[in-house]
Image (cartoon, rainbow, N blue to C red):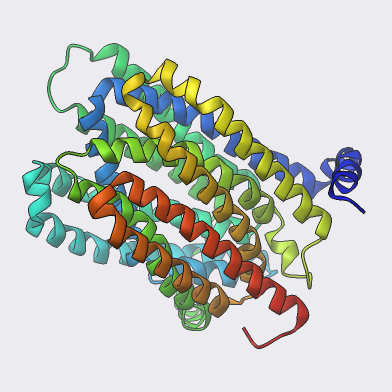
Length: 430
């Protein structure tokens, strides 16, 4: 059977597929993630116009530091909570795992804050760019970043797709409204615009996260017992994923930071951040499909081939559409000075699409508790990214980082496909 005929048959079954509960969940989460794109674009346009290129670069630079910090500071405890939820059917116990993992979050936040304070106090690059004081004042923001990571790991394991969609969409919608209010209401304000944007960004996240957390109804009963179980899952599963993430996600986040370090200002960070922002939806499509099937994957020995073909088709179609539509969009809404973001996007978009396809197989491996395989894949991917970042960013800056994204995407997709195929055939222990 040809790919085209397989795709026609699959679309012919769409009505039946999306009439199911699983199909509705896919639509809910995918719709939320699709809506995030125009909301993010509008927010981005307002931020760039309100802050200017360098101001927006400073915003992206600080954001990159926090993104890197949560990767190295979570120690796998959120993934441990994820695993605990996957293997637990009892509703009351799952509520206790939510509470126990939240206690871990509070402890992690305290440790991360100390590390960030030392970094902000000692780093000469922040002082050179006159960002030291601002950064030190933003350290409490780390709680919002960790809380977002908590929801990302826990909600997919518990199949709480509506709440997961809310975590993805609502903070960005509120942030858009906040940015619009600041843009229209404070045009004459010549003070710390970066601070206004930053704290609007954090406040809108915290507001939504507090509401979602209340909806989860976490239970603090048997807290000591659940914490011990979380520690067990961390030793056997979560910490393996953490080690991989420190290298893979850490190196990905580090790229943004390195561009800022090797540039005379942070304008390169602004262009690269735009390229990544428009590329990210390509990783969301396969990720969303896998996330909504995460719990189902734990009961399957292989991924349905029809689901894989449909995922690949939508991903490649979206990549071509982005390449066609992005240049006129950037020129119209951002101006000719952002042409570099278009050129960067050619590389980052292909890389992010491959990241999404790799995550599709990653979710299946994760649902089966194969933390070591995911860790090993992350090690391999991060090695590629580290080599490209180290060799290319000092000379080529943003383009070096973009080429690194593509190389890492190729490596990540190949290694995840290898481990998935090995598991499906029963080869090795993984």
